Amino acid sequence: MAKYKVSDMLYHNESKGFLCQSSPCSSSSGKEGCPCALLSVWNYLVLEHGVPCQSNDGYKTEKDICNTLSRKLIEGFNKLKRAGCFGQDSDQMQRKILASMRSLPTGIKLNPAFNSIEDFEMSTATLLFAALGIPLIHGHVIDPKTLSDSSSSNASNQGQAASNEPMNSVALFKTQLTNYGLTRLLRGQKEGELAVLYTNGHYSTTLKKENIMLTLETNEDVLRNAPDAIWRRLTVLDGDSFYLTSRFSPTKSQRNKEKADQWYNQNLKEKF
Image 1 (cartoon, one colour):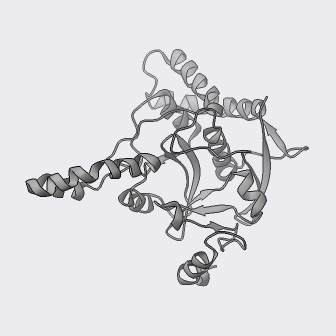
Image 2: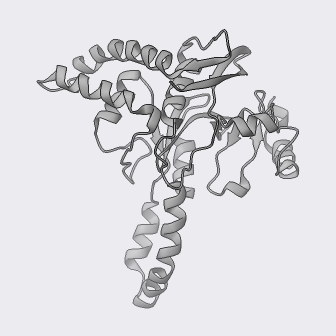
């Protein structure tokens, strides 16, 4: 039975445990067998609802996690029933959602819609998040102005756009996060709001802080090399990203230390 290491962080001036994974997921391939969906769900519930994450040996087993999630699901089913989400055969739908929950350790696929950060194709997986009371978001949103400009461009411009389309599609496929999508995430999320972000098969627990989107770092290798790293700034390009501590200051050891310090001094230093 798989088990996950419990790391410590400071959240709202309280010590919290959160779960990490021993190897990073490949967000560009939607890697099967990656537990990021399970960990993002669990870590959201720990931070938002105070689900206990203590452990005598410093680890939580997959069985313990799923047992807790099953109990939370049963509590959430009644809310979905009252909202009419199950239709006539509610028992069958509940069984499907429980089966979807058991797939969290190996990954579940979602189909985001392009018009809203909260819009996904309805499935047992989306009902799973609804039953757990977890906001599910994505940044795979296309700027309607871009589509409008594209449709009104002349033939030569269309030809040029077509030649660039494969490269743009590859970049978008890797992250399913656009600049416009990131802007919509910042507009759509409230200050201090937690959610679970879906990006091409990968899940992250996210937080909006001082108009910045952050993802909770759960890679053990990163945390081992930079023990003070808790949050990672969400960016469209990985090269622009950097790590922050529980108190939202740049970590002492990271690749983009100079850029992180400069950004922090310009944007956050006077706020903390």
